Image 1: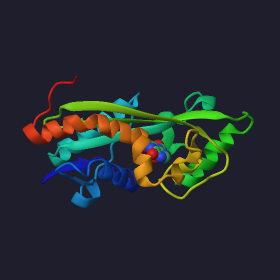
Image 2 (image 1 turned 90 degrees about the vertical axis):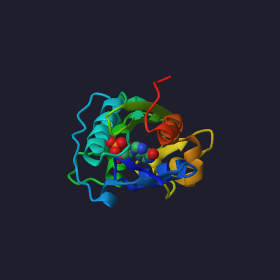
Image 3 (image 1 turned 90 degrees about the horizontal axis):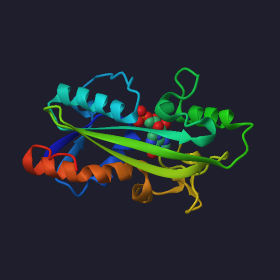
Image 4 (image 1 turned 30 degrees about the horizontal axis):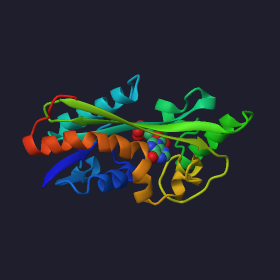
Amino acid sequence: MSKLLLASNNPGKLIEIQALLQDLEVELVTPALLGLELTVEENGQTYAENAALKGLAFARLSGMLTLADDSGLEVDALDGLPGLHSARFSPKPGASDADRRRYLLERLEGTPPPWPARFRCLIALVTPAGVVRSTEGVCSGEIISQERGQNGFGYDPIFLIPQLGRTMAELSMDEKNQLSHRARAVLAARPYLADYLRNESLTDEG
Ligand code: IMP
């Protein structure tokens, strides 16, 4: 079975992506599992640049086909913040996901709801030779002020999917994987991945 390196040790992302690729002949491994340690400066101007930076760095280090994702939450009332800064959006040192959710809600105080928002995910699939293919997925919803649900990670408990009347954290992983930004980006990347598994190379971008 071929191995695919995920350029992240985020357990939430690992579980979701593993489920999305379970029918392919590929074993998803993490840097931690391989004993690889690398901190990649995410200093790109876009999600796509950051995903490619992470993917290229891990593909180079491991010599393996690598899947990197960069994702974030964009809140209209905050002019698109936290966006690229979603993972670090709190002034508190060592902030947790819960701290970041609290800080986001603090920033929204004074702006009347509804607070439309979207999650965005960019995937970079990177070959050991350094060829990059990027795909994108978006999931729209709105921020709510009361946390709901125990599943998922990050901003999921305050991200409502209006059509379902449930937050992302109230969805099972299978349900989240039907509609999430990451699921949509991974779905778009699957043809490239399947192609690589067949030919050990990537066809040109459509
Ligand atoms: P990244 O590791 O640079 O992609 O950081 C993305 C950050 O955006 C995460 O740490 C979360 O705070 C947030 N985020 C991304 N995807 C999700 C999701 O599916 N649910 C909740 N928060 C997410």
